[in-house]
Image (cartoon, rainbow, N blue to C red; front, side, top):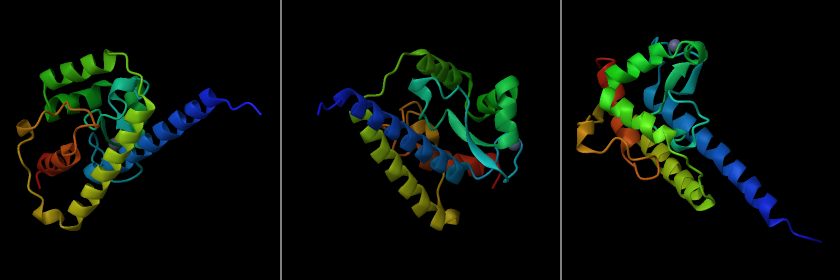
Length: 171
Ligand SMILES: [Zn+2]
């Protein structure tokens, strides 16, 4: 029987992408815990500022933020609300870099996806660990790190954004 290596690879790629999407969604909802544009804690989803179809920014934890399903849906037709939030939360320069990153062609290799998955799993564990003692999490200036490291390298971004989410809500 002929073994179709190509199709197995495609299957694994698809599976890894789905697993990474799921991990990003879990991280974002655990990190933000409320809709960034309307503040509700109901029906939370992981919402991509720049569409998920853009591979380069698909798993970027700056591009992904928590929105309720209504705001997420509204973003499809009226992107200005979420974009406005992003510009206030970050700044125009960071938006510019994100847009540039999104426009770059990207094909995630199996190796990259496996590494990304491990990295995201670690970030999720860190986040769960931190949320146990929420009150003691310190918010360190995000400027001390490069916020545009993609999720592959950015082991601290979830932690950093987590602290910032508190700051945004004035806690
Ligand atoms: Zn909302």
